[in-house]
Image (tube, helix red, strand yellow):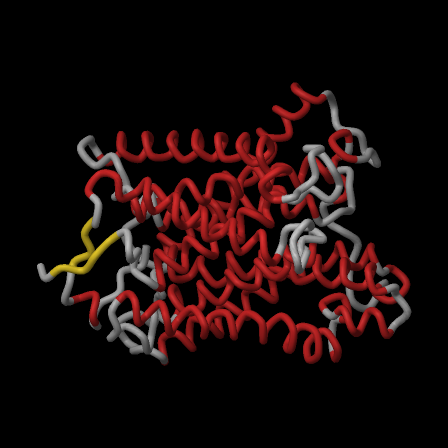
Length: 406
C-alpha cells in the first residue's frame, strides 16, 4: 500500500493489543458491527429495508469510494496529526457526508438531472418511469459508476505511485492533481466499458448521439454490462492484491516509472480477462453451457455477474490478512510468501462465499435461492469492506492495535 510519512503515525508504532488473537478478534468485531448496521438499515426484515437489493448496493458503493479519495489520494490529509481514535471520529463522519452528498445531491440533482438521467432517480421518474423502475435504473447506474471509480482512483497511486507528481507536490496539491487525472480517466473508462450498455437499455434516446452498440456483444453473446462486471471486478481485486498481500509484485520487476505502472496496468487487465474466462469454464462444467438469452444461472449475464461476485469474496480475506495478520507469512522467500498468501486469500474467499450462501438468508435477509435475480452478494461484501476500511485506514486498526513509542 502507499506509505505515508509525517504526522502522528510517524511517531508511534501500532502493535497488536491481544497478541496472536488480535487478528481473530478484529475479524469478529468488524463483522459484528457491519452485521448490526446491516440489520438496521439494509435487512428486508428490519426497520428501513434499504436492500431492494440495488438501493443499498448503490449506497454501500458510494460509501466506499470516498474512503479511497481520503486515504489513497489525499493520504489522510489534514487528519494525520491525530491519533487513531480522534482521527477515526473525524474522518468517518466527513467520509459519510461526502458519500451521501455525492449520491443524493450530485448524482441525483446535478449530474444526473442535467446531463445523464440514468444516474438520477428523480429525473427518470419525471420522464415517466415508475418509482421502482426509476430507482432500480438509477441505482444500477451509480453502482457501475463507482465500480469504475474504485479502479480509476486507485490505480495511479498503487501502480504509478503518483508519478510524476510524487515528491514534487505536497498535500493537498498532490491529492488534487491525482484526483483530477483519475476522474478524467474514470469518465473515459466509463464511456467505453458501461455506456454502451445504457445505450441498449434506452435505445430511443441514446442511439446515434450518445452510445454506440456494445462492442463486446459479438463475442460475449450478450449486450449486458454484466460482461464488464465479470472481468472488471477482477481487475479491482488484483489491483488491491497488488497494494496489499502482493506488496507490489510482480509489477515491481520493472524498476522505473511510468513503465512499471504500464506493465502493472496491462498485466492486471490481462489476468482479469483470463480469470473471468476460467470462472465461465468452471460454470460450464458445473452448470452446463450458458444459454444466450437464458435466465438466472442458465443465462450468460448471470454468469458474467457471478464471475465478478466470486472476485468480490476475495477482497475481505486479502484486507484482513494484510492489515490484521501482518501479511503472514514472512519467513520464506518473497516468491514463496507471495504464493502462500495468494492461495490463502483465494481459499478464504471461497469459504466466505460458502458461508454467505449458507447463512445469508437467515443472517442478512437475502434470498435463499443462490441464483435469484435479486441475489447480490457484492452488496454485503462492499458494506463489510466499508466497515473494515473505516477501522483499518481511518482508525489505524484501533482498538485491535495500540500505539506505542518506537
